Length: 118
Image (cartoon, one colour):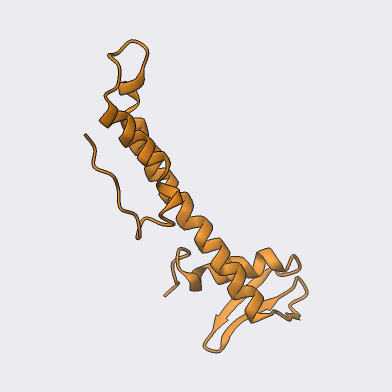
């Protein structure tokens, strides 16, 4: 069974491709990943560098998912601040600002505490 890309293990495959431009095929074995070039020769990979890059990719992915949800929630409240509507209440303005600031305290959807919509 293939590991989902959105796990650290799943990101290792992508990390190998990003760190080694000569790699055209990656195979996961029980002992780790094996990479091959276009001539089917083994490409030497650094496990520490791969783990670091995979962590970086996973963190980026998680933050992107958080921003996507945050942007959706802000968009749901855009009508509060349109020029042809009544002025937004302080609670509405605070909610929108709290959403914009969410990435200052959370790094993924799994560790976010969303503000309460007024």
